[in-house]
Length: 432
Picture (cartoon, rainbow, N blue to C red):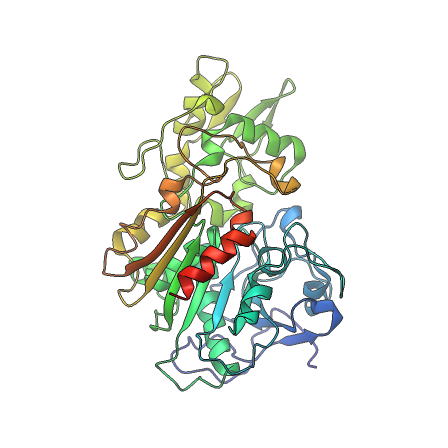
């Protein structure tokens, strides 16, 4: 096994056809054995483009799984030029089905998102009561790979490049690097679905500063979007109480308020959102959006006749908070959601949509229960994402991509990826 000498030095490598000249299709390092359980192998891969940098990361989002720390020689913050690729059981077993790449959402990694929900680590042999798709799909004959980003709430532009890079690596290990007709399916959850649509839409064409991204290479057959904010989210600007909870518990979450009167003292949080660049990029003003307009409910109300509610959302100063408003934060995120929806993804891609309607929290998902304003009833939601946003496809189909399947299921934002019936529904859609 190669030993990682320096995560930040450029590497000498041979590139695969159609990849950018910065990504090595050979790993910096890899591990196998008990530490990768229940995956067979995990690789640390690296893109040496100078456009990647080391992002600011909240303590709660730093790398903490023993497998990641082994690969990074104990560093829990690394350059965003790095990402991890997980190999599920039987990944190298010949199959007549398309290989699958699983892409996780915010605050997550491949272990919790796709192998074993509820916690990030299971010891080898430990019983997994709710196996995720990384364990279920190989039993159905799929070759399955999962991606873990170095910063789970990081910049979506950089993460979209790693989706392209992961596909390059998958082609290499499956011996398909010279097959221009080779395609995979991508299954993405939540924020990971936004980074996926960026690659599929060749978003680099819309931003001169991102011309360095890999162009879309028509290497994805189907995009399965599970609880993906296709028309954005606005939770931190919609709920004052959410801001207080994040502050009180020092949660790894962005804020809507710039400053808050907290236990009689003003506290400044101007720099907090810089640790969550990917979250500001998925914002949308849903209160005023003509396609998925959703007003306020009583969960958004404040005691000052809703003056602070309106200040939080639109910007200004009240007796309890200061906010720049959601529109300014959307601008900092480069209007990403509206840009994707104006362009649409490549017409050759087929789309499957899954959205949830359970706005309560159950199944012992405690780390979400303390954070989210569950019980929203102004419009159907999965307790974080409104169904209107999760099922909004007018934008991504603008160039001719087709929605070939859609299910709206009675599950919340987390258990829609692993609940037995949700997985059954997903398999039905995939195997039609």
